[in-house]
Image (cartoon, rainbow, N blue to C red; front, side, top):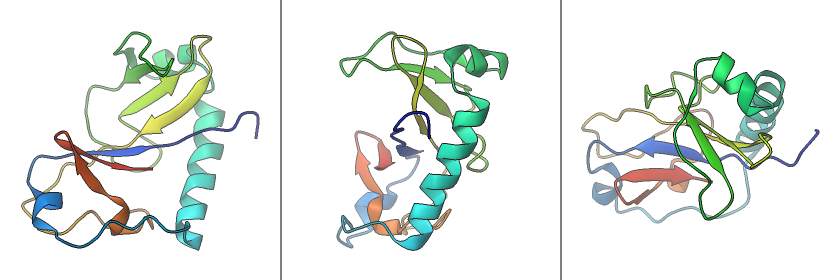
Length: 134
């Protein structure tokens, strides 16, 4: 792989799913399915969106300036990821090189955490009105 890429999945929280789910967060090692998910999105997204210019050609718009970590967000402004090939946001460094991606899923009124893409539901945790999986 050209670069070490950090991918964070973010789920927009439209209900109180994580608050209602009192199960502990899972912070253990990645499972085989999680490793496959990360490897697949790294390969795919590095092929399709290696630079900010590639993101713009695909319809993403610059959403933020450089944040405190040095990243710049480009968003599809749909705030929902239909599948791992369509992240809601892509993150680039100051030089326009891909750093990572955010994936968002609209939630129902379920009291369970998301169970998608082979990611352990215990990795999802509420944080300021949305959920992260890293």
